[in-house]
Length: 227
Image 1 (cartoon, rainbow, N blue to C red):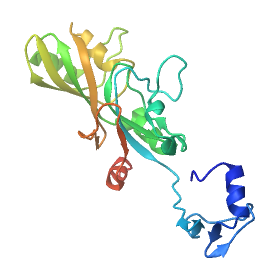
Image 2 (cartoon, rainbow, N blue to C red; image 1 turned 135 degrees about the vertical axis):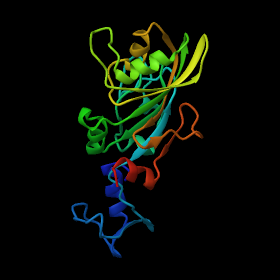
Image 3 (tube, one colour; image 1 turned 180 degrees about the horizontal axis):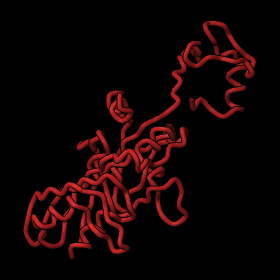
């Protein structure tokens, strides 16, 4: 729980600063039950956390990866106290795409959210170079044929503002490479700005500026786990 390296913890034990259920412990091989035993370090109770869940508003120019030799990654935006848990991004957003990105070390939840069989909806806000029409909305609803011949699953297109520069929201249930951009390219239009605003029941916190993040609330975690 980030109280130091193995060497640091040995010092804490040797100096008598660790207690388990009120008894001073100096042997580092002592077995404890994290959910039952009360462990104190220098009078402070150690609260055991197995998994962390972080909501990040990913900024433009950052890679959705755990490491990259050329660019900053989303992990470079985290504090050491969260890096310690070795979180990873659930899915990915393109380098120039902003918005909601979940980071966690809960592999089971990540698998549930990313599994194609689950059809977890993801909603994006986008600015489009070109006029988005009702015909586009109907086409997206049926499934769009991409440049490689793949036909997307039905998507929900909402036109927020129309004109030479349109604003839309698009909900898809899959995550093909550059999918949103390629869907609009299939109807002769270009995405000039893209931001993910929701993933499943999780909504991007409007108080998070690009590059900022926060731990999920317990009710948000429950929603993601379908409780």
